[in-house]
Length: 197
Image (cartoon, rainbow, N blue to C red; front, side):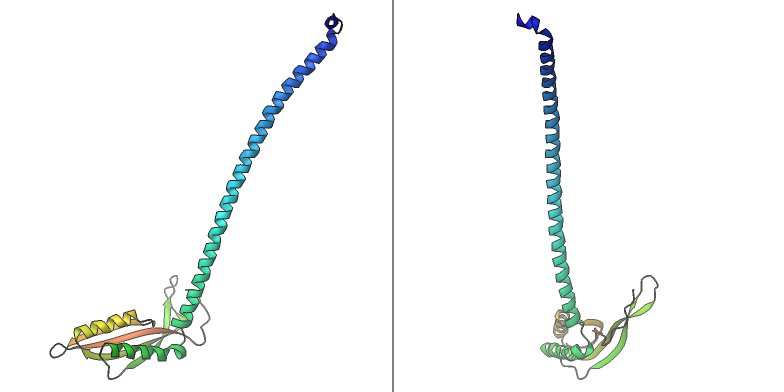
């Protein structure tokens, strides 16, 4: 019989077959393990990509919000925080229009002006902020409803105006005497060198 004569060769071939089978299964297990690792890595990279994409979208939204805020600040700076030359006359016109709308026209107006200062939190000192504070004072007489209407119109005005002081006194009958002091801020023509507050 042939297998007895070629026993050494058949044993060698059997050992090679066993070794190949063991190598094949070991390689397959290792290959599957590497494939699983690659799939896990791919999933992780896809999650990182999605997170980066979401972060990019958030950053773009933040940047768009920043641009909108910058436009709003510039609009406020140019329209409501304008210089005295640019905004004083429209402000006086607005105050006169609102007093006329309340059926109360003051006989005269008084104006005052001072340098606006901010308080530095760290030093507790006043420092100029590059703005001028202008006050408008006037007195009117009328009914309580007229007073409320005037104050409401001043608070709803599109002009940047603050009711600083108010005093009320009774007159004969239903009439009241109202003294108002309004103030507003105007940006200085030549801005003060910026100081940190």
